[in-house]
Image 1 (cartoon, protein in one colour):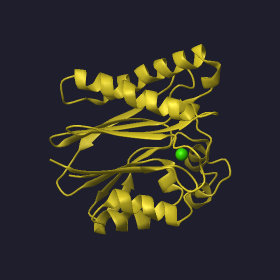
Image 2 (spheres, helix red, strand yellow):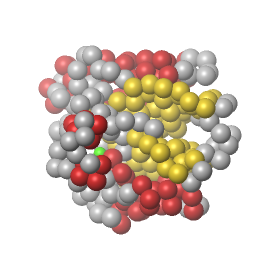
Image 3 (cartoon, helix red, strand yellow):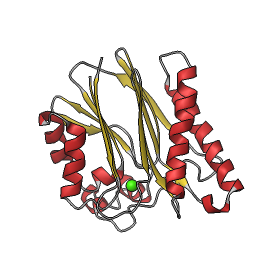
Length: 232
Ligand code: CA
């Protein structure tokens, strides 16, 4: 059984925490980063978490990536419906990143710019790809990864749950080995703390979730910060 650590923090600048996260036992992990005016971002990320929490436990394990994707599509429909019914919720949306581990295999489904990382043989590797304007520029070779980190349009997503009816969800599965560490996080961590520091904390901290949040706060805490760490 994996060891799980989780933490979320409003940060030093924002008034609300629009992130949401959940650990569904035995081994399913979800982070969501909501967006939208007048606290609607909080509503969107909470709706995502609630929909996933109600749906996934009705399915026998292992939860293949298509099931995780279905949970995101159900959330998308629910968020769109709420936004249509309530003008205060118009335009709200959320990222959605779900990881499920069953025996020696991991499955994920993902929309937006929250991330899954894997630390393996002391090397940190980003598993998910960001659905963002800036990431598209990097992929096309028009920006370097370092330029992307500080780009003023970093926040613009090309995909979000609840934004439109037809979203495309990234999915995959891969094998898992003892000793690997997985990190799910929102961009409030990765915009504040670089990969080297993240890897160092994952390798050395007694409570890596709390330490990662503290590192993001120490570096400015400009956004909400959410972290789940899974030590297999
Ligand atoms: Ca964020």
